[in-house]
Length: 264
Image (cartoon, one colour):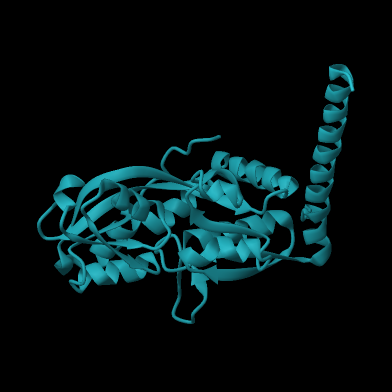
C-alpha cells in the first residue's frame, strides 16, 4: 500500500470516528424543546453554603442560587423542580440525570470541566481563611494547625498543596463553619460572603478574616453535549447581568454589590 493511500485511509477512518462521536453526543443531548415540552425543568441548587444556598425553616431551598434559579425558570417559561444539593452531591446529580442543569455556586476548575460543561460565571466571591480571635496572614502560618474545609472543593485542594496543614474535611460549608465556631478546628477556608453573614449574626464569635486564598467565580453547569442549553444559559446570564437582576439578588443576600464577573 502506498503512503498516499494509507494516509487517505487514516483520514477517512478518523472522519468516520469523529462523526460517530458527534452523532452520539447529539443523540444523548437534552434540548430546550424537550424541557419545554415536558413543562418542567429540574434545577439543582446549593444547600449548606449560605447565603448562596441553604434551607429555610420548612426545609425548602433558599438563597441566592435559588432566587437565580427561579428567574431562569421564568425565562424558560416552565414550572421548576428545585433539587437541593450539598457540595459533594452537585456533579453526581447532574451526571445521573437527576437534574437538567446546576445553579449551585460551582467553581469551574479544569478537573471539573472534564465531567461537565460550564457557563460564564453568574456570581463570585473571595475564598478566605478565617479564625476565631487571632488573625492569620498566610498559608505558612497555618502549618501544623487543624484547618477545616469542605470536601471536594478547590479550597481543600489549595490547603493540601500548601503542605504541612492538618486539613479536616466536612460535608458542606455550614458544617465547616460550625466546626470553627465550636472549636473543632483552629481555622477554616470559607467563602467571604458566608463569613460576613455569620459574623453579622454572631458578633460574639469574634471571627477574623486573615487573607484571601483566591478570588472565585462560580458557574452554572450542564452535561457534556448539552450545547443548546449551555448557550441559552450563557445568553440569559448576560441578559440578567446587563439588566441588573443578578446584582439585585446579590445585594439582597450579601449586602454588597455583585463583583465583576469574568467571561470565557
